[in-house]
Image 1 (spheres, rainbow, N blue to C red):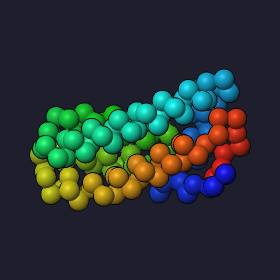
Image 2 (image 1 turned 180 degrees about the horizontal axis):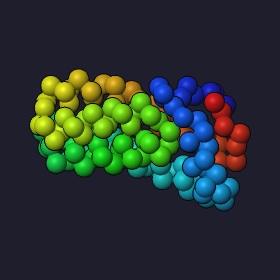
Image 3 (image 1 turned 90 degrees about the horizontal axis):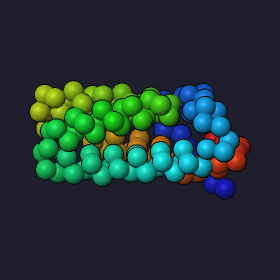
Image 4 (image 1 turned 90 degrees about the vertical axis):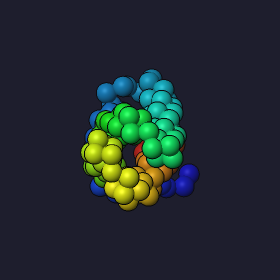
Length: 124
């Protein structure tokens, strides 16, 4: 299996703790749901940015910050908190500035989750 590089500022211990909390029987469900939820956030962020839907950007950045923090993706959590502030301020320049970094961090987190075997060991 190919190794995935973790996202920037990634807390591996937090991710491992999340896996530990759900227990071995639920790890496949957790990984599948995380990938689905993160993919949904990605779609919603794209739609919100494309349409200037500030409410959607606020809601989605809030959701993504929570998901990222739960997974240990600290850089993504910080970026989405910045995006949330930009959405509250209705700041299109900040939103456009943050979008590429958020996309890269989100893609890295999704790749890491998809590369995590439910039965272990972790590939990174």
